Length: 341
Image (cartoon, rainbow, N blue to C red; front, side, top):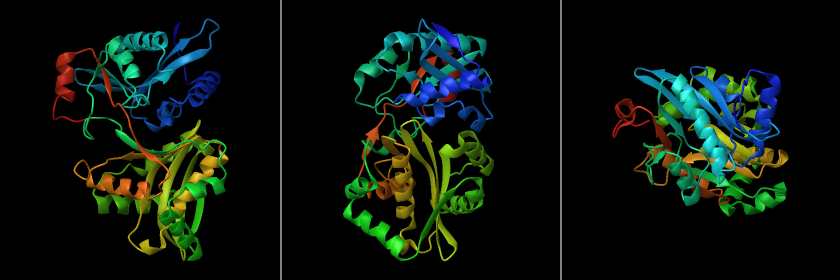
């Protein structure tokens, strides 16, 4: 049964977030709070319900009005058993009704489907979505590769420490022995984070989010979002923002300065985030986006080299974007070859 959820209702919101956070396919960008973060978009939410009225599949859809039609995007959605064609079909039909009401030219989804999961890919293609394998860094909306540490279930800090590479363990120890202090908190640490974030953006020549955007993230996820900061002799050296949602803890943004790199503050920072993942009984620590070659993005390739130094995880390749096109001419204008996303 298709339903449209009013996420402004606290009871509906609580049931919805409990469902999304319970599934491996659920992520923080499908949480109800993501509507508050992306406040320049409108949103709608379609669900597939059981006969008893329980949610068995859902899709939070962001809506951006453009000339010629609206762009609909379900970041890391839909959320359900991604092998269940019946649920996926209901969510797709429900989304088509929203598309009609919004005069949309496109619905884009990019669920947590890995590139090798061909049956899941085929299900979405069979429901009318177009799909291009081996999408490049500039073709996919979200990074096509994430570096992930899996199978944290039941691990202790001692177990996890043994999984780290020798060099990584040495750098964490060195940071501690040399007086690097790591603390975590909320918006009270945001100024320090943003100063380092701005410096990092300038140094590595990538665009950064406005400070207000990060404030909304911290507000939306409450105690499930943290800012970490590592300092030496009172000077902030590195900082990061992470979000815990369901069984997944994501290292969303990181930043550092060029001073005292020999003290390895970023290694201690990630180690403390990993320990938070254990405290929350997460099964997955997601370092987030990377690229595997410098040709795709030199900056993100350097990030990959840093993340891979932990020797605990793996580069996971996602399938990428699936597009359900409603107006071909408008779609080609905005999404055609060379336009990027």
